Structure formats: C-alpha cells, structure tokens
Image (tube, rainbow, N blue to C red; front, side):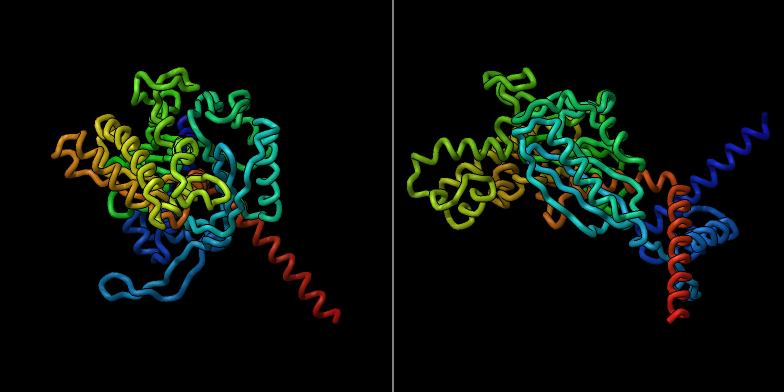
Length: 424
C-alpha cells in the first residue's frame, strides 16, 4: 500500500515540477537551465531531465548561448509559444468575441460577432458554439478554451441567475453546453473576474495586493483578485456590484432589488438617458450621428459637445458612488475601469475620482489608484484566454501528448515530401 501511495506522490511531484517550469518559461522569453534550477529549487539533474523531454516533444527549444550569472554563458531555453494556443471567448449581452492566443498570451486572431437576440438565448448559444467550432477546426494545437460570461453567473450550477436586457439564458447550463460540444478542457468564469485576472497578470511587480476590475459596459460588475487569486464567493457572485442598491427609492431591477448601480452606471443607461434628453438639445452634435451609442456620445464629447460631456460626467458620478462602496468592501490598492465606459476618458475618470474622494477617508484615498484600462487589448477576452492557459499549465502531460502528436505528424509530412522529391 505504501508503495502505491509513493508512486502517486512521485507522479504528482513530477507533474508539479513540469508545470512550474512551464509557468516560468511562459513569462520569460529565454531562460537557462541553471536559472530554472535556481528559481524552482530543483536540482540541475532534474531540470535537465525535464527539459530534455520537452525538447523531444517540441515544447521548448534551445536558443544558443546566453549571458548567465557571474559572467558564465549558458545555453538558453525558450518556450515554443506559437506552437500551442488557447481560445478565449467573451460573451456579452449583444455580441460575442472569439480569439486565439499563443502560450505567452499574445493574440493571434480575433473575430467579433453581433448577436441577434430575436431568436432568444438558445439560438444565440448555438451561434456561439458554431463560431467556436469553426475557429477550432483547423487548429490541432489548440489545447483549451476559456469563456468569460456576463453575471450574475452561478458557478456551482453552471447557470446565469439573470441577464438584464435579455431572457432565456437562465434556462441554459453553459457548462454542459461546452462540455457536450468540445473534447478539450473548457473553463468558464464571470467576465469581470476574467478581466481582473488579466489585469493582475500584467502586474509583474508584485504578488500581493487587492485589484478590482470595475467592468462598466452593457452591464456592471466587479472582479476581485486578492494576492493573485480570484475572489468568487460561495456561489460565484462575489463582486456582483451592479446589483448593489445605490438608490433605495429607485426603479425595481430584474434582480428584485431597487435602484441597482447597473441602472445608473452602464453604457445602456447612458444611451437611454441621452436618447430621452436629446430632443431638448437641438445644438448637440449627436443629431448628426446615425445612432445614439456610447461610442457616438464619446466622439461628440471629444468634439466639444457640452450636453454629451454633462451626461458622461453624470454617469461618472454614479460610478463613483459604487466605487466608494467597493473601497470599504474590499480595501483594494488599485481599481481599473474597463469595458465600454472607459471610452469616457479623463472626463469620466475625473468625475469618478472626485466622487470617491468626497466619500472615503483621506488616508484611504491617498493610497488608492483609480485608473482606466489602456485599451490595447480587451482584458475580458485576454482573461478568458488566461483561464484556459492556467488550466493547460496545470496539466503539462496534455502539452506533452499534443507535442508528440504534432512532431509525429510533421515527421510524416517530411517523409512524404522527400518521397515526392525523389519521384520528381
């Protein structure tokens, strides 16, 4: 009995060691064997054995001599990041995005698709699954899928509690939908949590702290990462601040509460509010726009439209009310505003900061960073891919099997090519 337990322990240790090395190589372009040994605490012999297997299966390659410690030169090891990939899917209320990322989290391809809601949630789900299959089909090296979904998402049940502005989603078990359609691992997470994970991974300077991703788009939510780990709560709805009441006398929300933050701080609220007041402002540049969208409002504001500016500031104030509560709930050191409303730029950010500063203790505000996401890549989509990558890195044997299969296929193609050349 002891021998079996020892065998299991050895297998677990070997898997953990391979996973640890892959994680280091995924974050560092080139690394020597001695540096890997120093960072992991493993012996040089163990590192050499693991790296040799990874080279054989094509997971890593040697890059030639690099500068090492104490002036010594060593052979560099690099992850063949483009040889393997993961898929990230972002599902929103009116659209979805699918992208492929390599093993360094660099985006390779992306497709954005508006959703037709007339067919209901069932038709929308089928459309998403079909598009994912089409992107997956030619990629034999795609190892996992990460899916970011709008909340409230009940992770224990694999279902949505409710999605405002849409219906029928609460009847769909999204975990089962993906499990039945794909034979590779699929990780599903609340979109704000996925975005928070992506933002945290960009913070290379620290392993400690509390980061809040304040997602303000068609819906409102918050993803919280504490010391690198997502805070989910017992049902997976921690950070569902869009359903937090900021006006007890406000309109009833689909969640059953009154005056929810989402009803005052989302891009949908901004669009509806501007649309209702626009007839009173014939001078507004919005009259020249084909439709009243958040992006159109931001464009007109940038061109000097005072009406648009006032409305963006009003939403910024509302967001500030929510963030002031978040400060006392989670005590973060950084809050990052993401999704559609970040398009409000400094006008929106100044209104948020002013409101928060008025409502939290000066000593707390002094140590708090509130900023906009830089917008270079959608953190939700990036976070969805990060979920998939984390899952793959936890299962290094899957990468080894895929690497061996790819190498066998490549060798077969080379043999066929040589045969064709000889025939010619």
